[in-house]
Length: 219
Image 1 (cartoon, rainbow, N blue to C red):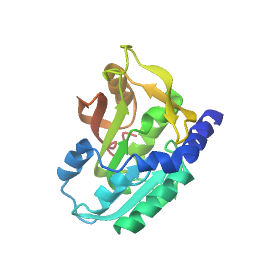
Image 2: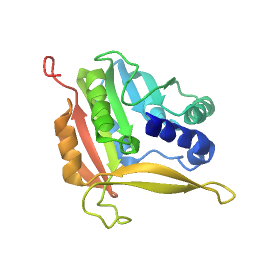
Image 3: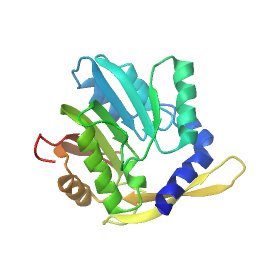
Image 4: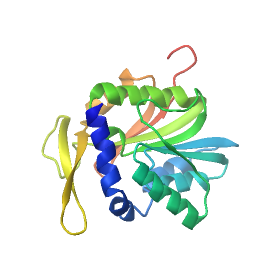
């Protein structure tokens, strides 16, 4: 638990500066949402940060309600400010990605971008994937992304734990925990979870997977 609290405290500490560098949505998320055909849907941005992807969800055709969930209260405040400035509606929730405070089958469309790799143990990461499967509706879909060893900044070919420095204005550095996935490991963890892997790809050094929740009776 202490390691997970450390991740939260790190992002509380760097929240304002981190959010200022995260202005634009990722094109992979834009493409995923463009493929969704839903009506009166609930969207979830899991690990929402400053809500740049929650904004996409909120403005997508057919999505009636958007929830942004993050463990960092500081990042949620930056998301609240963005929503106020850009005039989109999002319900912000502080919560742990491995124990989601959401009902079963309550989410139709979810994006879980660049967050899973911050969870400090495989058991916690698998629990988080299972939670995503639990909250997805039977026809729901989610996009999951992680950093991978395919990124040109890494020399390793197998998954590993590391820290990546964040430099604050003034030069102070803050270490952020990452688990860097290799592609086979990412597939294995998805297969070991309650999610159904529909397709995946590598893009810009990241692994992206489109997943569905468990069928009734399979969880």
